[in-house]
Image (tube, rainbow, N blue to C red; front, side, top):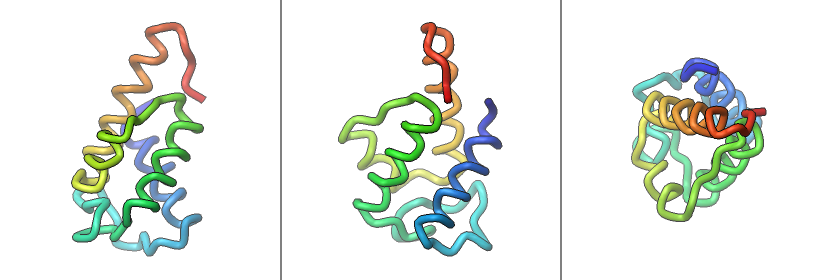
Length: 92
């Protein structure tokens, strides 16, 4: 799976969470200065990503997500999913 796959899934998840995504791209911040996700929405997005790709985020990670761009987030998820796959787990 690529960062582009993760980005597409993330944008779809944001749509399902009722966020405006028409102008959302790799440089869009996830937090208030971009997609405008609050802490609860960031946690929900992290949960959806965890379920889809078999990766995990701890509390510190969730705080960091809000200051990432969508592109940075997608690259991080793809990297973690690759680590899971190499460790014998399989991303969903």
